[in-house]
Image (tube, rainbow, N blue to C red):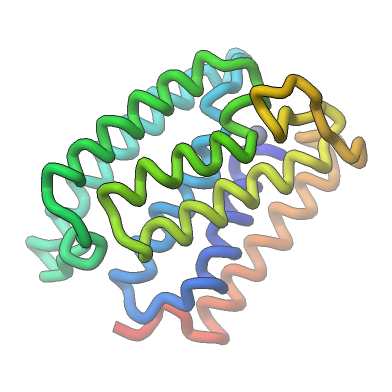
Length: 202
Ligand SMILES: [Zn+2]
């Protein structure tokens, strides 16, 4: 699937699971859901996607800067919401995550980052510096990415380092099913936000 479809699916699953209570919870849930939805594809090598690692790093820096802006203007302390460990754990976790994302970008497409091993490695690194508010949306989003990619024609090395690739061979990653799912997930996100009120109440 395309990145935008993964992001929508990740956000939908995470919002439904976390039921964010207020804007700050919603921002944290969506931020880490988006990260989990995108990180597996740091291993893409085509011309339009090989900058994903750079974009992810830029996004991470933007998120940190935005958290200061949100704190300053809206008095919403996102760091306080996610902090369960010390600043040292927090920094080690971010640095390790960046290193593993970089190594993931060097692995072959749909291997380590799309495997059960990769899922637990990235989630464990984040859990070292952040709390459950972050790990659950990240974990289910990364998992949803792997699940959606199983439907594609190109297989994924689910049990990496085993090279055996699994796929259901049902659709193209950028075909009609992908477009349909993107629209469906987008509509469902609007539905859960507007009609169920998740994250709307401050
Ligand atoms: Zn993928």
